[in-house]
Amino acid sequence: MAENRTQYEKLYEAEDFYWGTEPGDFLKRIIKFMPPRRGMKVLDIGCGEGKDAVYMAKMGYTVTAFDLTESGIAKTQRLAKEAGVRVNAYIDDINTFETNERFEIIYSSGTLQYLHADKIGPFFEKIRKITNPNGINYFNVFVEKSFLDPAPDWDKEETLWKTGELFTWYADWKIHYLEETIFEDNSGSVPHLHCMDSILAEKIISRK
Image 1 (cartoon, rainbow, N blue to C red):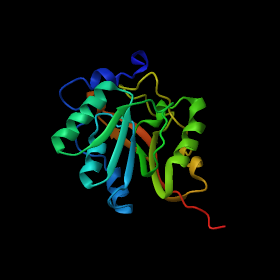
Image 2 (cartoon, rainbow, N blue to C red):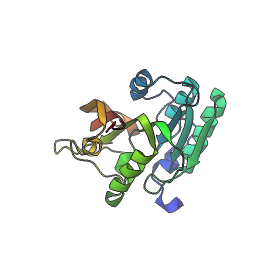
Image 3 (cartoon, rainbow, N blue to C red):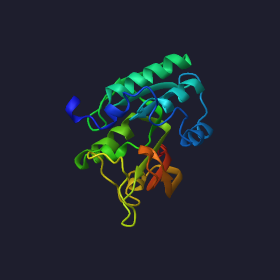
Image 4 (cartoon, rainbow, N blue to C red):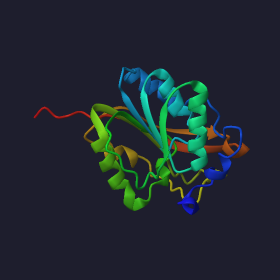
């Protein structure tokens, strides 16, 4: 599998954390909506170096996390050990992952652009199956805009989404938050702009 890993395999080998260690702001929205309670299970898809997964474990959730990069998972395990928490972190591919577990919270930030076109439908079918009733999903995707240049650290395996495309997969879920934003980023030490669509949706079981 090594030849299929992204450029981040090498970037994550550095001693410093490429994305830093501060958790993503989106986690505040998730925690407010579904505060931690004993046994509440979280899945972090594409956890990178583990900053979000470790933060959620510190908050009291039972956290499972995977990433394609071996170096990213090593960093996740290191960060969890330093924080004194447990994260079930392992190497896997967003396009082919399988699990028999069910989760109250599933999230992924900055990763769905690695889904192959023919895997998008199967991915969301899988997500629907492994999300518990009244569980929530948070996802974001980078969106194509003709007036924005590609990011300098954009990976050759990544594919931009279309505006609103992410939202169509949640037509029969209760949508609590959706937004499209354009923001400045400094990844790769080169300032640039991204457009991103984000959604937080709840799996409601029909009473019919």
